[in-house]
Length: 593
Image (cartoon, rainbow, N blue to C red; front, side):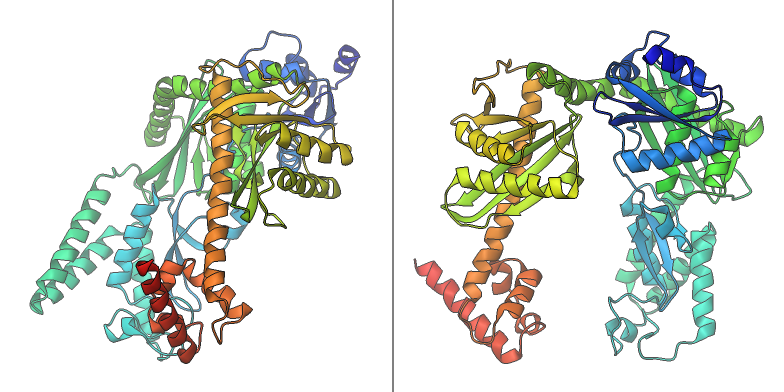
């Protein structure tokens, strides 16, 4: 059946979708020639990640498009819609810091990160910076040198910054527009690459403080000037046209692609991005998909330099940006440098990358075989916590293909306070999967509960009521509270797992993660609960004020050390004094006990 279907695929561009036996899309790709690309998965021996993909393919579908660009756009949209298992590029959501200049209502600077490219539109962003420390250092220095708005919110009266000359009093005073324009030109000029502006401003301030005999502040600025000189002088001027550009170098070997992207801003290399990932389709297609995802989350400069084997027309059509394949000169030298860095990075990091896969994906595959599961893409783990029956909570963590999926974690406040693990497990399992059925969200292939036979029975009872045939296992700890045994929920027998195996370490990591997540939530609830009980019965503090105090201070200790002024930001002054007196007397009583 599959062979006949493969023969009928047309020799046209389009997007193809690989499906498993349940009809779930596990990979989305694009091709200039669908017939050749899809057949290539089955007519040759595959290795690595591609071999794993092919072993799970039970069927495929495809959509023919008019051009390769249309196929590329369709591929990206389908990946966003279905989040397929084997489209694994850039799953870490890493973003880089930028310095953002906010013009209205008041001029100010801040360090920003934007994962969504649409949110960056029409914003004045400068960077990316290699790390947040460097960006904050420059923002703090510019705030010291120029009278930008520094306070939070929109106060009605000028604050201390105005009186010491570090703010123009935007909230109350009529600002000199000429002075404001000069300040903005200086700041934007520096952020656009004119280093002399900032250096001259620092020297001017240093002379002013020295003449005022304020040598301490002058010395501080001298240190700032030294820092700026070191940072800027270390950056080699690469191209004299000062165009913002990225240089994309890549290297392919042993089934892995190494990527090195150099960020060049105003003629200087300001940082870079490195990554290593396994090939699933082919080198060119995976690189083009990678760049489309990368630039959906990062600033797109005016020009991007890429190797000649990438399709610049398709990339330009999708990203609406200038992609260039340099042939000679400085740009070609930059591309060679990026490619050499990509090669070195792969040689240095390949063993680490492969070890990480053994500890995650391979361990997950080993667990699947031990439990005789056909698919193990997602594991939900549950843990309960309470203190002698009080502040009962549960936590759920999720692992997908051996890796924590932290955006899927969930916290549950149990509806009763009682030391009853059995019914706590029943409640959290019902709440989690009854909602999943209603909202039609993704279900796991395996549920692991922290505990033994009792917790397994509680979980399976609820799953049976909801008619969900999901495999259940229990993780038992020893007397030292360490992972000891995995109980099969069907046979209630211990699964034989060597203590030095990858799968045992994998189970230990999962159990430690769900325990950490749950106990952290329990401590938070307990802390807020103890504050709430302390505040009960104090005249003038009702439910609303109690909630505001908990939100602001978070613990009794912080509330005890708060001043009347801090307490009165929420409470009337007389109630704040009453609360402070009560907390002081309570503290003395506790010391006597």
